[in-house]
Image (cartoon, rainbow, N blue to C red; front, side, top):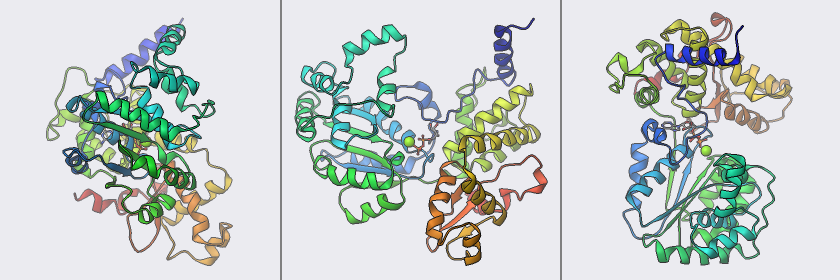
Length: 431
Ligand SMILES: Nc1ncnc2c1ncn2[C@@H]1O[C@H](COP(=O)(O)OP(=O)(O)O)[C@@H](O)[C@H]1O
Ligand SMILES: [Mg+2]
């Protein structure tokens, strides 16, 4: 009889058969403190340089990192913070993912207060908001046997947090207290503004002008489109530095694959991309093709990577050659569609985009808009953005027009679909 344990062993054995201890790809970024995160983070040198140049000054600054979902904003932010924690021990470096329904001042206050566990006043603020503090947390952790309850709780949607009446003043007071101990200042990193809708973000930022111009350093992450974009032009000077994150180039993507695989490979830590061993269990050819399919988009890269490895393990393959890769990508394609859970209309638009290969506000015809049941291209945009968030479409980098193209993976029958190889990807590969 096959027991659950046998099956577990088989699963582990299949991954080991690929020469790996585990599947290294993850959809969401690894923790700030994770050693693995340090090892897999790749590229973004120009952007890191811009940020760290600012940190050579005493003047506190406001920095915005923006880009599409999955492009690597959180990962970039965490890389910056982890370097600062090591290099600037006298700076209080805090991080928080923006909780639902909270203003920026309260959010910032929580971020700072929970890093000041030996400051009674800070802890009292948290208690007043109904947020478990270190001591309460320790008690609960023992109960639940997990150590990330705090973060889990904050990111849950409907946790009622009692808002402080004077959050801005409390924040100022807290920052003053912190600065007595941390002479290099306080950095407040607020992540995930990209998960809120643009109108909310506009209101949030509007209300937060005061605190943003206050005594702390700020780093925020946001989405480039719509209101965030408008806001940046209207509120000129709100940020000292705005960093757009774009797709990684082909070479960096390949190095990223090397780094991820290296972080999990058994007995082979070759990280020289010119050596074929560096991408094992991928063959070099499959590795290149994999990178191309992931289009330099880190989240898509991770999503595809974990499905490809899982598929290879299921097949009990020892290597990932083009054939195994194609199987893996097919499986990934199915998963992306399932995860997207499109409704009928969204699916209609996805199919239309797939058949047309491209949709642009300049070229779309009135009959086509009618066929899709919309009156204008701008009515189509929310659907296209939805497809983009699900890694099923992407906006092309064009200044003169709004253009979307489908992200195509090998379908059940490869030959029936146009392959994305003959799309603008060619230019991206020349890097
Ligand atoms: N430069 C990078 N090097 C390695 N992994 C990255 C990089 N950028 C992003 N990732 C990984 O890609 C996934 C998606 O990135 P994430 O930072 O969550 O995107 P965003 O915050 O823009 O939605 C995460 O697993 C993250 O760790
Ligand atoms: Mg993010």
